[in-house]
Image 1 (cartoon, protein in one colour):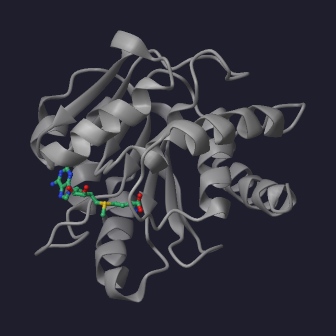
Image 2 (cartoon, rainbow, N blue to C red):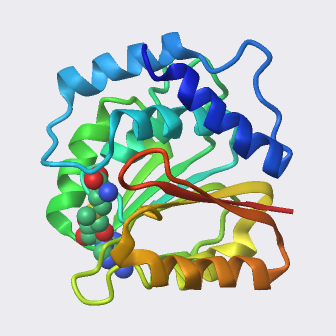
Length: 223
Ligand SMILES: C[S@@+](CC[C@H](N)C(=O)[O-])C[C@H]1O[C@@H](n2cnc3c(N)ncnc32)[C@H](O)[C@@H]1O
């Protein structure tokens, strides 16, 4: 795969910044290839802004995350989320204890459920048709990887900061928060607000924006 070295370099930047341990054998790109086959053959997806590089990065960062729980907010058709979730049988890594994909759109949730069923998580996976903020406020399970990708027609991504704060009490030590689209100019104020919230929480090891494609991804790790 032609961009695997580049993705591994960005993974290394994140690992150094946050003190993450990388797998000795490196990212399992063979498992990535197996997952790519399932997704390209089985998933029904509308347009997506997730680039091939971003898919590979999401896959790679997922493999260095702790496995308590994966939560996605604004999961749309489940496409970005699928690279984090990975296939229950085909993954080379420890499985998630549970995974939740949250979206306000019922149509997106129905499509996400159909798509993500192919990843064999069964009852360990919940697709939740609800507002992300309300759901995170009521959430009571440990989160080790939080993926934010809401896009509200009015408030766009300004909800990222409050989503982060609501999830924070449940994020485990060493847990990661990912927020998609930090390279998009029109969202720069939303990301400034998120960064400010992360830094002022004093519970984060740091905040990093990786802009390796048109969308980019922000990362924070919890102490
Ligand atoms: C446009 S999608 C993200 C797309 C993704 N970047 C991709 O290309 O695959 C944003 C999603 O956020 C959802 N959304 C917006 N506000 C939300 C909220 N408050 N809680 C949960 N989901 C929300 C929308 O229904 C939509 O499915």
